[in-house]
Amino acid sequence: MERIRVLLADDHMIVREGLRALLEAEGDIDVVGEAQTGRQAVQLTQRLRPDVVIMDVAMPLLNGLEATRRIRKVVPAAKVLILSAHGDDMYVEQATLAGAAGYLIKQTSADLLARAIREVRKGNTFFSPFIAHRLHGSSLKSPNGRGAIKKKGTVLTSREAEVLQLIAEGKANKQVAASLGISIKTVEKHRQHLMSKLDLHDTAGLTRYAIATGIIESPVQITII
Image (cartoon, helix red, strand yellow):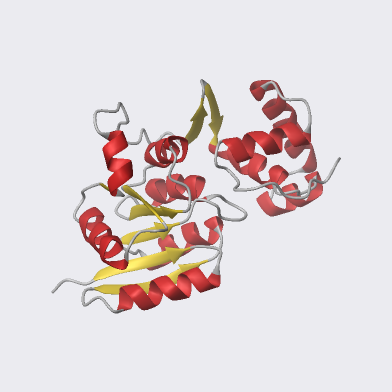
């Protein structure tokens, strides 16, 4: 029996431990690694070359949607299966555009998760039943692979989305610059460009946008600059 190599990406250790226990009880699935940030998920995927990455949406440093997009770019053979507490259309659409092969909510049973892993490993798509029902006949297409987040006609590049997430997580310009290896002046330019592009005027507005589009999950303390 061919074994399926799986990488778990979730910022909660107890969730990763539970998933590992459930999946290792299956006869054909090996958990080869765990990531607690989106950035680490990309790095481990490049190093470990798993068949399937189980990815949460709300991930620190780099959200699961952007991490999915990067994984699909650097390791096209790896299939990403989103496992999230959120099942609304906006999250599902963003995940599909990012290149996810499937989308499950965290209320999913262990049997359904294992089935989803096997299906996406084969090259198929797989969604939680109620999501699949909603998507039936919809216009969602395969990912375009262009590395952008789109919401109501506005497209953010991968770098803009990354800067936006760090700002929304409460990072000051200096911290964003250090995290991304760019200059503070470049961060300031990205911030101003984001505000202009999104027609927003302050950090609070950027944070609300990040929450609304699934870039971050919930409000965080904001550092006013």
